[in-house]
Image (cartoon, rainbow, N blue to C red):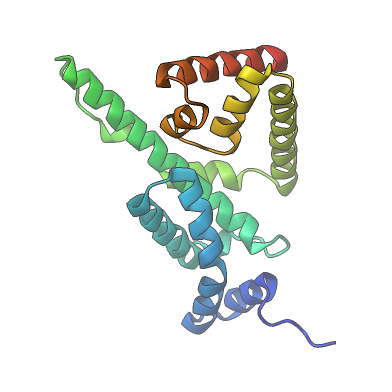
Length: 202
């Protein structure tokens, strides 16, 4: 049986063994498209996607010693990408909060010590086991399945609009146009739908 030399595990093992630029580039080309799509889906920002992708693939080179080859390389890389995304989102949200305070005339300064870096998040990641991630994924999947079931139980006036917003990721304006309803009505129904879902889950 011919060994598949282009699968993730083989490429990762080759790079771990040689630490060569050639094997890194082979692995880089294999994982890059999926990582880019994943990051873009999380942050929904073109410039940030490219920066986070670059940081993640750079860490594939600089931190490969932290990778445990008994697991898929993608599990490790997607966790790094997630932490990079989370760091970017937190920094962005903090910036928006500071800007909003400044708009109200409140003088604030941003301390570098208050920023949560991706390296700090990676420390937390490295302390978790593969089973921790399996349990975490199962919990998320269960919550998602429960949320979907709760959406199905909503009255039609809420269900269809909530599905378009939360599942189909449609913009409020597009939903309003689809149902020929005022934008504020759409927002109110989505807000009410979320409340009903939260009540069912709790």
